[in-house]
Length: 103
Image (tube, rainbow, N blue to C red; front, side, top):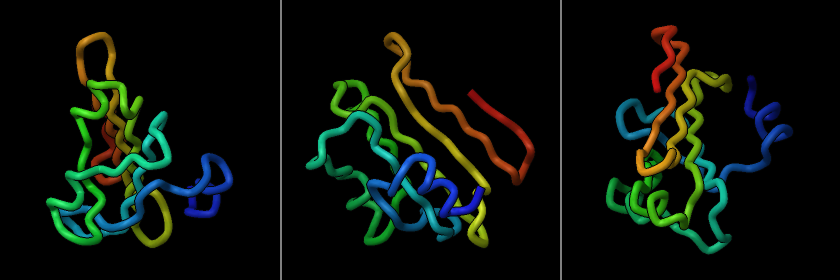
């Protein structure tokens, strides 16, 4: 999917920046969070980096899920989301780079 297709489907991201490893564009959606929620972990990584799952906020129910979309040349190259399933924090990852899906 392209950036415009994603925006049409789920709207604008809550945070836009780059990932910490490749400095490629990265979007984060904070599903179920209040409008004033801020991910303090991103601030610790450095300006413009959007690459941190706020595990504490998910465990506390402040955020229901965090969805990250990584972009390369305007097209999705990876998606990962983290959510709470019972007492277990689960991360689902899909990457076009290695053609694998992890949970």
